[in-house]
Image 1 (tube, rainbow, N blue to C red):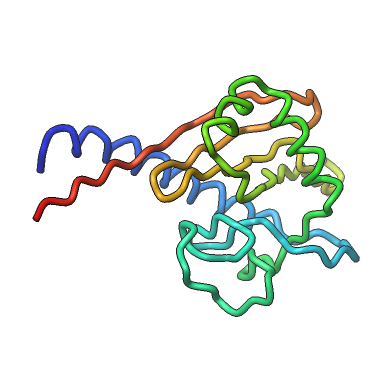
Image 2 (image 1 turned 120 degrees about the horizontal axis):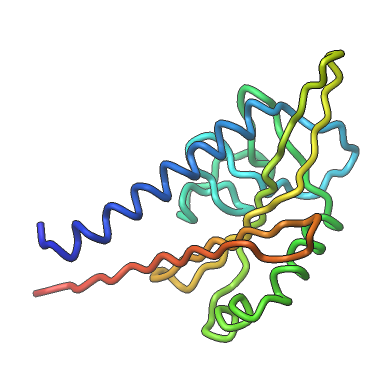
Length: 167
């Protein structure tokens, strides 16, 4: 394997490992009690990244009727207001504006759900952070971490893929 490919492979594996950890934490946190029936944009166990529940943005729908996140903890429905708020915060960031100007599209919003168990057993669950997924055709993907409480972007990871086909 070429050295360049090996070097690009390491960060990609690290990002996938981190995203898998986020998925496990989302399932560990259980479900929300919501009457909202809008499409769920949480990714399910196995790496579902967008509203179509297709792994890694691929063409394989899984017949969940637009609801992702099925599994041990049930499904999580995200309100349109939450999604709109996260998108507006992201779009106000100059780096995100540059990505959108380059042709990236917003393809998913994944809330990071934190649960706290108090001494008396009371559980508080809140999604104070979200990850916005941006895609550029088949060559690029960017993850934008949005702190909802502080209304700011805290981190951006950009992944690109270069394919050189030889006859």
